[in-house]
Image (cartoon, rainbow, N blue to C red; front, top):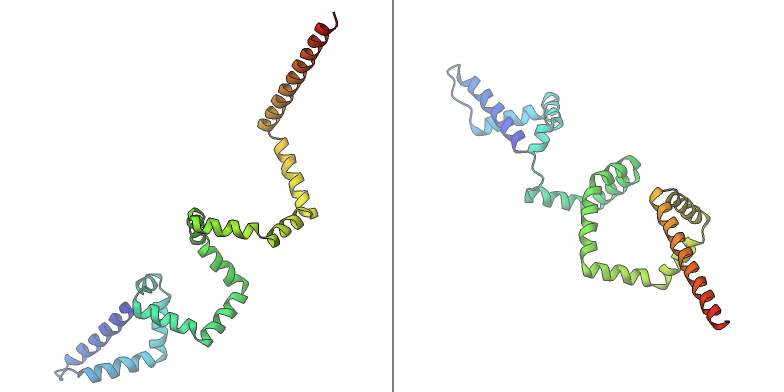
Length: 194
């Protein structure tokens, strides 16, 4: 915004300097102000400002963190008209998607910070322990899509080489244990029956 104003002031100074070259006295502040405002009100002036605001460098130069700008934005958004605008924007799927994408990383950071907070963890545990949530989980476990997903996940897990090796090792260990158990029973029976 400051760059736009400085550009406008430079234009006004150039116009006033051009007028001084003819030996005339320089225009007063009020005359300069009127001239600049008149220029801005013309279609060319409006188009120039629109072009300036479309420029990425110019948009970056406009500081939104300025307290006056921040206050104005907050006041505008909290009015009834501002809330109506936000409702319309959020009903637009393209806008909602773009907003979600831009906020995704910040939301993820916030959630990770909150998960480390003991107070937040306690609240989440309390929510998960409520009878309503437990009922929801049980209902979810009984659904066909959930069971299909579990079946698919187990199938994928069993197909991995690491799991196959672990399963084979567990079976071999169980067989050895059974064999040792049966050998110890046979030896104890043979000692009882001489």
